[in-house]
Amino acid sequence: MLAIDANIVVRFLTRDNEAQARRALEIIRDNDVFVAATVVLESEWVLRDAYEMPRDDVIRELGRFCGLERVTVGAADAVHRALALAGSGMGFADALHLAQAQDCEAFVTFDKSLEKSARELAGLVVRKA
Image (tube, rainbow, N blue to C red):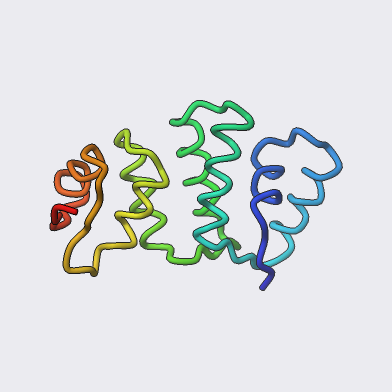
């Protein structure tokens, strides 16, 4: 199994550099690959910020990528839950924070909006900071 970086994911999805896109496709097609949760996070940020891809398209494409047969995602349950939360309108980074906090006794933040999302969308116990 090969661990891949965000630049492989981004080239695979955007195909903006023909040679690198071809190589990314070969790597993913011909190998079992591991994608860390942090790589998914970075890929989301790059696609949304640097490529100015609409957020809904980013979430859809990352979800499709994470579901490919030869792709193993680190913290897969949390990443898939974060993608679902992000599909409901939450920012992906915050969604990933909440998804990875599911087994904790409570979530603590100064961010009032995130506090509300933690409680309402993620079903977490929230404590005041």
